[in-house]
Image (cartoon, rainbow, N blue to C red):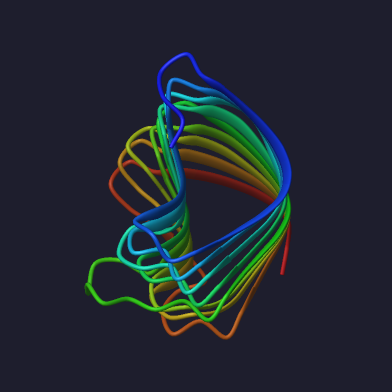
Length: 199
């Protein structure tokens, strides 16, 4: 865990188990090459933190998902999530820039979870991400989130490919949705979507 005003810089670390693989509050992060396996809550849980997370692998994380970002300003580059419970990447408020990621084989022990990308009140710029096999939505944007999606692929997401609600705005370019259990695009409760090159 990294405390308030702390700084963490490291390359190549692996954590088995524990409540969080990496947790921070008010910290500056420069992380490259981090693996978390079977975290009891989330693989990574930054709160009010800034910085860059690169080359991440999170496997079989439990109730809070793989990456849980709260009130943070982070760049996430090159991430793989496999077998997470709850959420693949959940971001609440703050800013997020995510590039080159994959989220596969998600689980949902709670019926209201299971989204690949779960974005609430955050300004998010997401490019080159694939979600495959989510029990919820591939991408959920809600609570006034402002989201840009580029070259995002959503496959076998059971509730919806892209779900937008509660004043969230999503601009998508090069979005591909395949084999959903529900609608490819679900726009509810004052959500707004602009899509170009949609398959």
